Length: 120
Image (cartoon, rainbow, N blue to C red; front, side):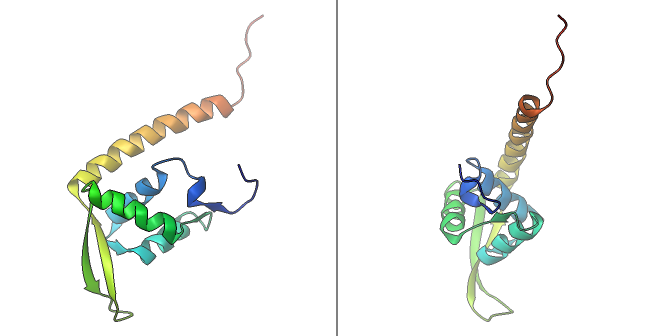
């Protein structure tokens, strides 16, 4: 495991990127670049999502019908962008994933936390 302070999406556990994408889309529909910016800002620049990770994750979510997408023209750039939106199935999936993630974090905290003194 690299010992640097710059975390990237490839350092995340499996499913973390998809969970962050779904959470971002729960807040509002967005195109790819906006998703990258949102994740970066919400993580205080700790997470840098590369296009090479983002778009395959979005394709998996589309294939699983957890998000839907529509082409539109960006009002700021006047270019075509694909805007993603979470589906009802995506919302249900996200809730399950967050619950599972919370349980995993609890387990990790138990392992990393201070050991309880055992009676001799």
